[in-house]
Image 1: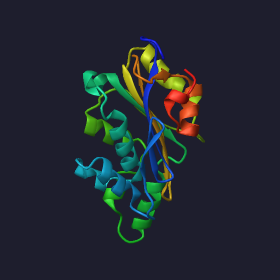
Image 2 (image 1 turned 180 degrees about the vertical axis):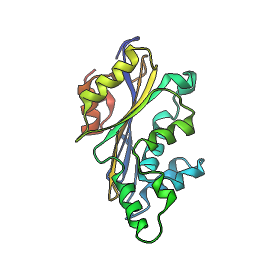
Image 3 (image 1 turned 30 degrees about the horizontal axis):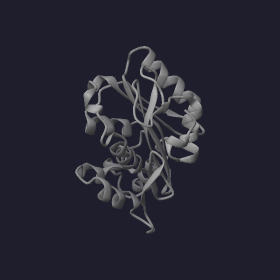
Image 4 (image 1 turned 135 degrees about the horizontal axis):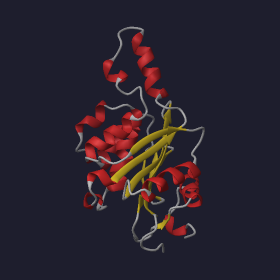
Length: 213
């Protein structure tokens, strides 16, 4: 068990291969060929109508964040004390392609809104009323060392007391999401916030209780 005062990963969510894991435990599987995001959202959380207007990154971020913060006490933090640090390798390419296709007939303002990857951090901030530091980075692959460095830096400089961090990618309906909640407090089954543990969570999607503390 991690100790009070150090940074701890207190929860994780993985969305991959039409399946959703919370702390390594699979909670949802989808066996149809389409509508995974809408159907899973309706099964797990259906009280935010704006969800249906979002691009794929927005939907993934909103769904994963809902599960990440569910049953947490994130509301005990000041809105300015909760940060968001996300990354992927293809920026907003999925939305870019859809917008480019729309330009051939009539440009879609609704799609154009999502042709920046950091829009997903804005959508999360709006829904959960978060006002802390946020950033969206582009890297070739999930970079646990960089995420650990950047998020730790925010904590060390007292910019935040909690952080939603991770990887959120989607191309041609191939979703790859790994979000984790980092806090400066002890939680049941929490594990140390280290690059090794981040890589284990991302690579395995297993129960955090099986990861070396």
